Image (cartoon, rainbow, N blue to C red):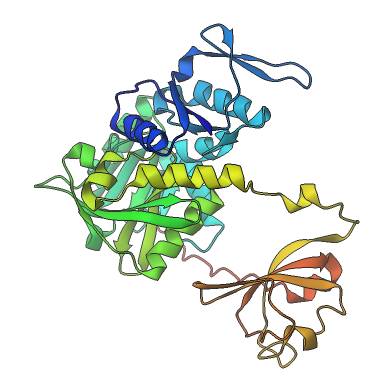
Length: 392
């Protein structure tokens, strides 16, 4: 397998480890400077050139795109995608995570714990934004900061307003986020590869510093995640279409709260802390994807109008609960059960007709939209938010 690592510095720990892991497994690997590519866009023939020469064929790329070159780096990744090369993370997934607001907006539609966050631009709305997240103390974040840069703790309202006004005056976009007191100075980093967490650590701030980032002097300790934290990390990465991700979570009294998702997570901290060969896990995952590529059912099946694939929840009714698939009436309704997920840790592929369904099972089905419509669970109605007072 021929792999390209897109990185501006081959001596960085993460780049070096990925290269070593690939070579140890007998793969042909090159480190290519992202800014030395040029793109040729023609009908039916997207091409890439590196240092002025047409790029040879690669089976896969691992983007290590720094924040300072996000736009151009993602254009290069997208060109590889158009050429049919497997990308460890796609350009759209990388872009989703580089904008903290966009990342949280995408996650907010799903059953993922999030620290309440507000975003405003008008000076008159600053106090409302603070109150919406529960009042001070609050965390103020630059929209595109990394490694803890641009993250500020404001202890009281006056200080918070002054900081936000100053940053707005400097043409900076900022997020206002609830301060989770019980997690002060620590967070969880879960490293997701594919559909599983391969390593996790707890980062703890030192001294008076409230930011736990290792680049800010934070210390790390290995941690075994509970099912709830593991599910949250995997789901967050899946929702953002990331195959490789560092998911940062706070340990709140209400459970895990995602605060950030990184599409190019560093390897040094997690490997040093846990002793796990994370780089090797990434290379093995990519190798599996090349051997057994993901298929988009919509592209591979010639579907008639009105047919599709849907994820459904088995209802708590006598017709379905504790009933074999063959007696549920689904096959008569032209619905085929492809897989069943139970209790978040049990997956049954291609279940037999004698398999007993249970209320709450998550089933992946193929069939008529009209037939499956009755099984789609109703979305829970949102509670009305209490009116926020802006009186001082």
